[in-house]
Length: 580
Image (cartoon, rainbow, N blue to C red):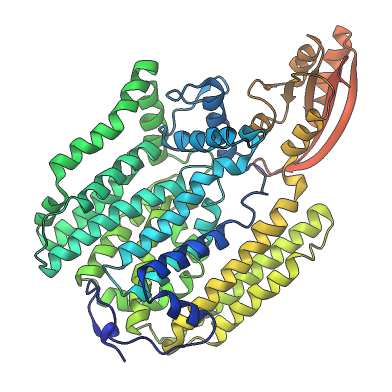
């Protein structure tokens, strides 16, 4: 046995001898742990394996993803990279960072000759993919100060395989990139703190301060001041526990603050000159402080919701969380554990208190939790309490529930048994079962690797096979396809009763969102016009059309399900004369 498992958090040295070789998945880990290069290659490959199923084939998701993508699309169309708008409406909830990243990808794809690049939602998701893989690599980098290289790889794999990151990596919005910046900042700060706690006499360096302050600037441009909560609560906790923040001088706060302001102020000045105080009023006043006071967009929930959802969103790592908790508590005053707990616990409590709750809010805390769990696994001090060890069954139960639910959804919505998904569902159940049956304290690593493999199979089932095939969930795609098949140039579109952002993104920025009566007036104003009328608005449309003597032709009817509103929809496409 090496001395790895008897050292304190923060020791950060490699074991004197390699772990006993295993078979299969353990052998892959044994191969990667030999060098940093192999470790990074393994994590990058795993990132692509976990995040690419469904990445290209899942249609735009309402409502946040489609809104972000449409705002970026308008930036590209208008060449205005300061203002943020969704159609004519200002969209000042978040700063400009993610829109710039998405615009760069879409513009680059267009330059390379990708046809209709502005309509390909997967291009808008590329920053999220980069953010997710980058966060996995930065978790590995951060963990190297707390556990061995083997443990750092496991921490990266735990984050990579978590259900919540798998979702965010496939959605074109801010949270995966925010995770990257938070892990970079917290990792730089953690390395500085642990070095100070060890008493290491290191040559003054600008590397960690540069990473720290640049990451903070990036996070502010992505999602405003949220990262300051993570950093501030961590610093406050450590100051209270250590009665000192002397180590923070190593992060060059004065020079770093100036550098951060140089990065973030130009856009904030530009948007202030363009919109006055509208951005600050909408972003800070409406979005940030509004979520503190009441549940926004029907997302209010009581304290404890994040704790309950954690067991699903951090799966498969969550199955070990309860077993690791007693050892983490005992190690709470060790430098490494103290820093990781200061990163995770105060911010988690703050999120539980805030009224508005969305699952991704706690995602930036997952790397700290992953490293803490791996530290306990390395020491082989997982709890042996029967009540806690029964949690290993969760490695089998959750993939069973998810795979069965996905297949049933396919049968219910499209009347197809989705046979392609069945072998992957079987793989998820087999690996989940192996993880559960093989688990004991001495083989926790092998069980964890099997659970990570089960997570990949679950991802293929849900994202790669079932979700893209659920056509009724994405009526906007069918509407856009039907209108593109017309034989007229520059079709104009109005929609009544179905106003989802995905429809605007998939059709045109000029799409008019209105009611049935005004849609009839719109149709009467010229040729090559289309009205997409939801069944609840058809009566108003036909009455107004009759009143004004409108001549129109009925086209395709599309039946689907609006999951944003939780109800079925039936969309009729009516054409003005002159469109065939």
